[in-house]
Image (cartoon, rainbow, N blue to C red; front, side):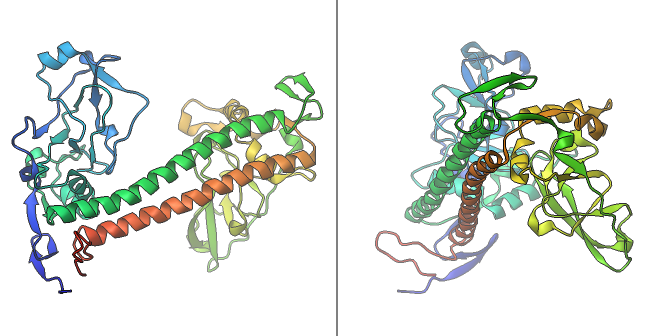
Length: 432
């Protein structure tokens, strides 16, 4: 087995036998609209059905993103504006940021399609190039960085089609292109399956939350109350019967280091901020936290959540911009952690906030404490919390696996798309 020789190219070191091709030269010139911008479609031409308009937001990093809201134009508009049709298999390259140059292969949408003017349509010459390989290489981190270096614009960065066309791509022999694309596609399939499992489990969790937190487990008798029908054995209580405000003032020492925390927006949880010495902390009204404390922002409308402090953040501190709440004896903390996520509780947060500007509304905890919730017996609280927590653990496990797959894909792209690791093609081993 012979050792692969490498050459120094304009974009770095490449295996001997690979070549550099600019993007515009990959286009199949035997096809119409093989490397061209999409169409400028004014709002007055938009319809509710007809020919699909693929927008910049549909183009993800390597994959097509379907949106709930779809836009169309009529067949008449298509011909009047002389639009360019996007065919399934065309590569769509977005010239706008987030990031600039990201691309995807156009799927079969079941209807004729066009795309926006800030998207380049690339029809690959498949006699020489694998469009799947080209799609992966366009979305390669180093390629996207090169795209960004060509960008311009004072308010919204974009790359011109001319500059885009001059971006270089490293091309191995066609058989190797296909093999590399197949390897990366297998990882993408695993990623897609895992994402689908997470999405489906999230739907199950959401449905169970509504069912268990309002109807309980195995109940046949219900009663009507001011907050709706609840199991006969459940009681209505005020939030003041569930929580109490607790304050553990910090005696700040200049040279002592403290872990600050914050609450992320919309169920992001209590998360660490920076670690600072006492003399670096400007707001001196800080309070110690314990595992099981709940935090609510005094500007509740910004966060929209009542979040529990995890075990690993016990002993951290929080400013007086938050209310620190303690769950009273006889009430399960995990049950409350789930209960505060009900839509009814989100409505309570809004009803207990005052102010004109949404980002500056103040949370009135005195008013919130007067709100009514339904509370099951303690044992049922624990059963409900355990059921929901087991589903949550399943989601977290799959999210961790998804992160591992994404890391594997990134590492594979780094070695395969640069030729640092060669693939076996037609029984020939291409060495490292």
